[in-house]
Image (cartoon, rainbow, N blue to C red):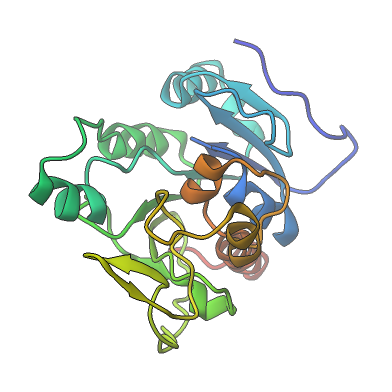
Length: 241
């Protein structure tokens, strides 16, 4: 396997591995926090704003471990496929008989991450994903016009939990044939009063991709910037889990 090319070899910022990187919502936040970022995703991601390896994320991680190249990294973020246990799959889709089968890669991802000996986070949406909810983030915590609750299992360090700010109202869109107005956009799916691509971009704080599928799957960069700054602060203070 080939390695993604570093941005600059004289750049001494800590290097972060972004697994299942999608279009780079998490990556941009970590970069803003002070990391160099390298991604890995199975799909072609031409809008990903940093060097990345196209391929199976778990196979790539296993390769990095086997060759010792994993030691180049200071931290790992992993967002394994979440459709199997997310709220939409186990709720509306299951009740209506919609959707197909999905892979649950949380356990094999965790097993490999534990072998790295590195601090890491595993991200998943609300639902039945089998991760510890060490940290839960919401768009309202960062003044975003999207709710997008996301849970993070934190290993090898500890992360502060921000207060969960009271929501300002409803998510705008149709529910069971009735339209509801509200301050938040529905950053998932299509139709049913869903936001336009420019509205999604503004709500999430993402301007480098216009692909709806990438936007609806993305973590707002504000989330990972918060996590990245917390990790770098903990490392500077010598704080461990």
